[in-house]
Image (tube, rainbow, N blue to C red; front, side, top):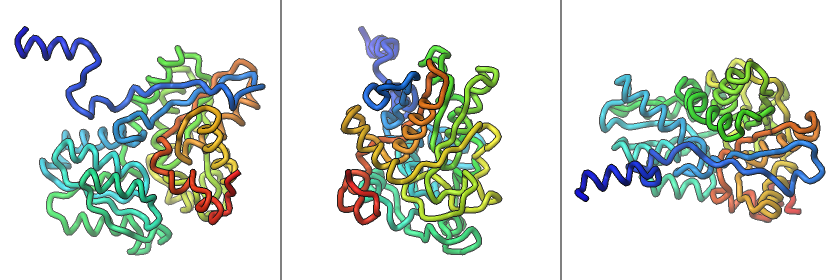
Length: 336
């Protein structure tokens, strides 16, 4: 068999991929068994940490970059500049490395050591900004990113909070996957709200395909304004908004949601530790938030309901936070 024939055979096998980018999406779904004992409904978790960059943000990074390249907004070799302390930075750094785009990430000072090291390993340049600065403050991370982009010829700002390619990645990918993986049996969908792209894009698809039959629930951390509460300190990485409604991300379509539930930080981190101890699932805090809401939803739902929660990432990047007794104690979260 020649080289061409061997390549064709490998491609046909469906088990060999031509690029790391081809590994993004089609993440597995697993049913919770221990945490759901006594419940009359089933809870499933979609493990987005199985994406090559370790989170659901690989999906939007790939879609935003591909769209920008196709539209001519991002030229070959152009620099990508984004403000993010979440997994979007890792996704952009990963895809940037694959596509030949330098990446600059503006992040908060309290980003986890693990995330900082991953970003650096992918070659991203890191800039620290004041994440608590208001939207009109020049020290605001988005303002800092805008300045860096203005000073960098050929640069491009993904602007994940306003980029339609963000929720589109989930409408086109995550939603159809969940519908297929549950054979159309999903009755409730739960996702934590950060940029709002996951819950809006996935939720919209599931609403459309089920003729409105799927109930969509947003998981909200304490300190976030998404449920109408007062802004405060947010201890769950990558989710929530401390800004007023008029400054909410354009990627968040609140009309898609049937309900927003706020979960106490202690319950979030306790759920993270229970997932590891009882389900052998090492997941991050935003996953703990979504699963905590999913479990409450399952308790309240009609018997026989099928609840699917998004686990945005794994727990490896949070070992010095969610799984560190000292950090938990210092944050007033306990380690029980």
